[in-house]
Amino acid sequence: MNRKAINRGFPLRLTYCFLTFLLLNLITGCAYYFKVETKTRLTPEDIRWEDFNKKYFILHSGESAMHLSAPEIKENRISGNLSVLPKTRLQYEHTDPLRSNKYKRTEINQVLDQVHLYLQKSLVSALKNGDNINLDFSAIQKMEIYKKDKSRTTTSWVVPITVGIVGGAAVVGIIAAATKSSCPLVYVKKDSSYAFSGEIFGGAIYSSLERHDYLPLPGFEPSDGRYELKITNGLPEIQYINLAELWIVSHPENLKVLPDRKGVIRTIGRPEAPAEAVSLAGSDVLPLIKMNDRSCFQFNEEPAITGDTCAFNTVFLTFAVPENADTGKLVVNAGNSMWSDYSFGELTKLFGNRYEEFIKWQGKRPPDKTIQWRMDQRFALMVYVETSTGWRFIDYFDLIGPLGARDMVMPVGLAGALFTTKSGGERSVRIKLESGFKFWDLDYAAMDFSKDLPCRVDVVQPASAITETGTDVKQQLSKNDTKYYIQEKIGEEGLIVYQETQEVRGMQKSVFLHTKGYYTHVRNYPNPPDKEQLNSFLIPGRFSRFSFDNYSLFTKNKMVLVSEPNVP
Image 1 (cartoon, rainbow, N blue to C red):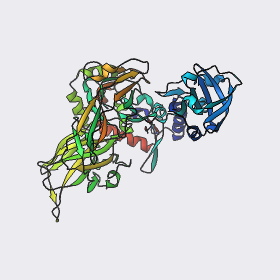
Image 2 (tube, rainbow, N blue to C red):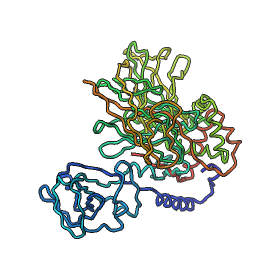
Image 3 (cartoon, helix red, strand yellow):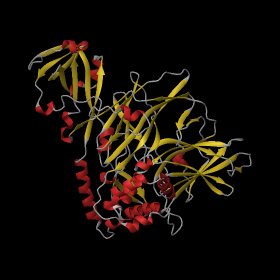
Image 4 (cartoon, rainbow, N blue to C red):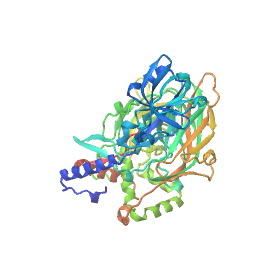
């Protein structure tokens, strides 16, 4: 929705009616997914734990399957009556236990109540309607339980509602899927299901911006000596994945490790929260960022100066510096906001029916100019250190996508920094973080002044990589070369397996997904380009101001903004 599409005199009642209608249509068009949880070596407790009286049991023997009704459990045996499966159950008789399976919302009660029992292959026999069976648990090879895949369902939905209070007005978020732009989504296998872990090489939307990325995978543990994850395409875009290897870092147990933007492993031993954290408007934001608790500074303050053409937002962090420390490591937990994603979508609309041509042109253009544009607009999160002559630029945190924040680290050289000294002799230094209006959410910030310690990094190539159609893409993902695993359509996914590495005594492991690639949006804008507006975005800060102006218009009119869901 651009500015021309918003009529200030448009009656709010009609606005709400129209958007409510739109919302209902979006919800009814959402996809629902279930996952298969598999258990072997069953005991009576396994089924009792699943509250078996409320479940619909299906017994499998070879290629045949029948309904096991009125089940009873006595000691180590299960008994019941066999009957023919109704038609409503046949389509879910066989599913893929390694991926999410789709179902219709109207069939939820016929899917999520199912439990499948499979007889041992050595005991396969014909099942007959009306038979009464009495089986020892040792005769059951495995049990499959159908459960809702919340992560997969959520990422397929166009809407959940996120509410923000701005100037006393509730703004409900709803960004249409057609304008949503994301990156390849990563899910890691934990226990018997896959959990969303983040996005990779965010913002690499042209071939010229192809880059390395290092996604932390906290809590990712091997199962049976294997790490399993999926890389999926969840939105209208084409994804070009050049490399997907696992970095397994062995390090002392009392340390945390993170790769910086260039892939250098940094050890974090004693991160200290800032003594002060103040926004450009003078607000105390320390309570928002001293803990990683999803309470964020959103870089959403109105410009303090009338006529400000940039609307940049800033937070100043004051850190105590140990004596003789000449470097530090800035540690943050942050992510791109949903509003930044929406704003960029509005910008791309201005290219109209020349957008595809623009994408191809950008792919041939030197990446330095595009990266500089992002910095000039503060689309990247910029980091500075205070010196006696002003603020010195250190580096930037690159885009990571709007669906999941992550921990990041940046080395900060303190040579030439301006130190202030308190009466007790304690030195402090100021760090500035700067973003365009509502482009980032900052949840946590700290500084670590300990020295980097040596770690062992095992680089693990895929043992296997198979697409949803059974295609082997292992070679495309094993090297940084000119071979790509290309995901062209929504729903395509690659299941990648890595072998566990040897344990190092006295060390713990942290796991990271090292990827390289890019992606391009699939858009079909019918209108001609708005060249006048597009040219204005060459001015530093114009995109940030564009974001602020649009947001102000939305909040003033209490407009509804439909947004992509947060992935759990």
